[in-house]
Image 1 (cartoon, rainbow, N blue to C red):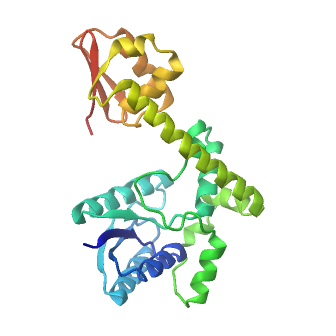
Image 2: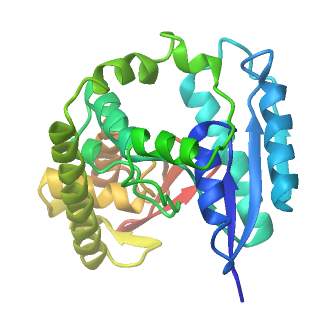
Length: 278
């Protein structure tokens, strides 16, 4: 049975190269997915280009358009895009594949540090999403596209300084290859550390969905916060986790606590459980 991939294709050089490479692997069943965010007036041209590309390869094409408008934030556009991609992936029982590359990882680290990240700010682009190009530089991707005479669409918003990523891209592009390699090496170290911590946390609190209030009351704050993050499906910010920990320690039996981000705590005298409400 073939491995089924839903490949996010924007029409840019990264995803065009990714799709071309995947088409060299006959063991894969590839579905092309394109999200038209409607931020640009001409974004429908990208959708048409990607559909034609899918047709050329003889692939199933899934798309969706939303009129987010020119004022839409990067966060909103990303959230809506991934909601669509996850839905297509679930529909086809597939794995999601994106064209994130090494320079994207460096940029994401820079964004996180600009926003005041914790230690996880280095452990970026680590999830169930398949990223075949993550160790390849942007320069190598462009060289591959030129070698194979591939065509792609440039997103005009990539040149806009409205978006934080674009502003930081101009700075990270000036970093030497050696510095970039150091950042990518630190990223891999932090991903490894994150997995080790997640294993230890799971060993400490168990599978859930019911957790001991006694454990969280007597654990030191750093440990309790890390464990509570795991219990809350990694949805809560540090301030939200601190408030939730206080609720775990102090709330009465039979009460509930809305932690934010669609997370609700329910308490008995000895335990609590966590549920997603949206």
